[in-house]
Length: 458
Ligand code: SF4
Image (tube, rainbow, N blue to C red; front, side, top):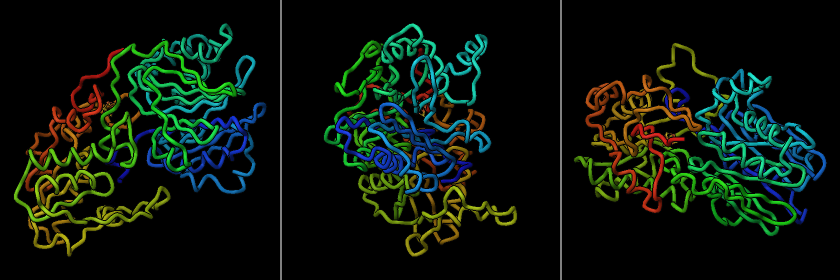
């Protein structure tokens, strides 16, 4: 919501292989990237291949800003890979945008990745010692370099990738396209999501099922943690060298915040996980109040759950201006304090004279919550009780998100009551870390390291 106080998932990936050569793969990828836009708003790109030649276009900007009929018409081919990302600092957008298109011994490949390698710096240093030159800060370039090296001695891309995976520590959900194959792979913990769909004779891979729906693909299954899935004219095959290496630990925060509520991740509905989180909050952090409202968009499902469990009516107490985009001119210093009103507005008729429960997905630095509570009180709310559908953030994430270092996390520096006072709430309640397992009953395990400090080990 606010660049300075909201988290970003760093990437979304998509790939399509159309064995029948009937689909417009570039446009299909364009629509899929549109559906994945929430996973990255800074750069996007598409690469297609017709079996011989590759075509690539990528740039900084949202999908509809970067692509138009003119540049989409230039793509041909029965394969495509697409990517959306938040790449960090604006100066690095160009070189960090994906998919990366690289040449190596005897072939060309396009590679798109979602994740974060915990051993990124170690690998960069090792490779640089051996003469490697890098043009970006991406894990995708490290993986491409390792793959190119491995292919010198390894005849098959999938077996080269299996070797490379032995050296990778962290989260990666990859889609790789060569002249005759589309390959998807997921790290052995399965930290970031990646699913498989089908449209007629075409196979597709996507970060979320919402992208499958957007292009009319039918969900088949998830890429398993550690699995390499290869699609070619011969069909689909699975390489399972790394499956079962670790007990899977998908990111719990995909369910709370990153993924779309209409997606199903690991067999579990994201909407239901959020609603359950709200219900648990409603039962365990209940308070006397007149209305429950959610912070758009990600607090809404949990607010509905809170209302259901507590019996307190649900209302739309905050409205979001959907047209404040990346290109929004930041206000001058003079009106910066009122920045929040440009993006979000309190609905006076909903909250005036009422004791309000305000539900949001997380608190990072606390500035967004403080601004929202001020807005609600200015609109006449008599009390604002803040409820958070995740546990307090105490630790950073090394797996492809921008959760900041622990000194910037409000809950790490302040007690619950100090934070309550800082944001101006009348009470503050979080989901308990032990309750996370209750919001994803379909899962056998998950990563919750940013809340518990219990990181996956490699
Ligand atoms: S540390 Fe947190 S955000 Fe990162 S993968 Fe684990 S649960 Fe997800």
